[in-house]
Image (cartoon, rainbow, N blue to C red):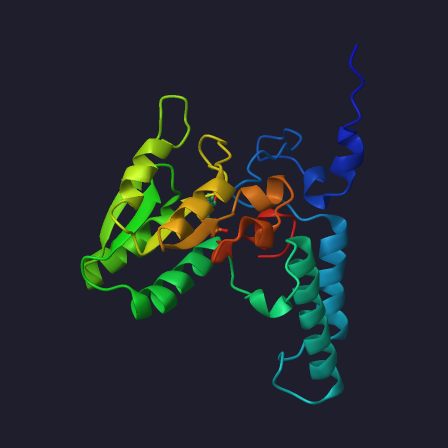
Length: 235
Ligand SMILES: Cc1ncc(COP(=O)(O)O)c(C=O)c1O
């Protein structure tokens, strides 16, 4: 019999919410971590400690609490940078989540650099978060949207991607790992192809960063969005 090293009881013990029952009196089993993960005791303690002992405006005060809060905040930026292999923490921009990050790219970089008839290439497997901001720019600015198709096996059709690159898109944006299919896309290869055609690349890492180690510089993407709240972190 295969040895199972995944100790469910030990892992459950890390998450206080798992001690409660559902409304119908059943022991809680939580299967919605891809939407948002539950928070382990350690994270809850650190959040609690912050509000009990620090709590001040970041970068906007010179009293003890403000300076200590700012230091903690910047230390978090360093840790997150290291987590995704980034050496310059200034390249880490805090937002609420993947949705807000993609919106930020669309409405800052997008509005400054995209004009009527410019092409943005997405895929048929995108989450709404990586679809709606571009649809809004299509409506407001007149950019064109095209989609890399998905094969019957649930993979991206790289032939359709090559054809779309031939139309010189300004931006290519796609998910690292599909929230519907679980497909892990060949992002490194796809980013290289986009850059060879002069396109800027934005990757939706909402499902990849919680599931496996991601080294962003190694991928060589221009933008990479992900969510702490899907990785045991706070909202
Ligand atoms: C692939 C993908 N992109 C974006 C999002 C949106 O993430 P958030 O709710 O953290 O903005 C999700 C959420 O499920 C997702 O699965």
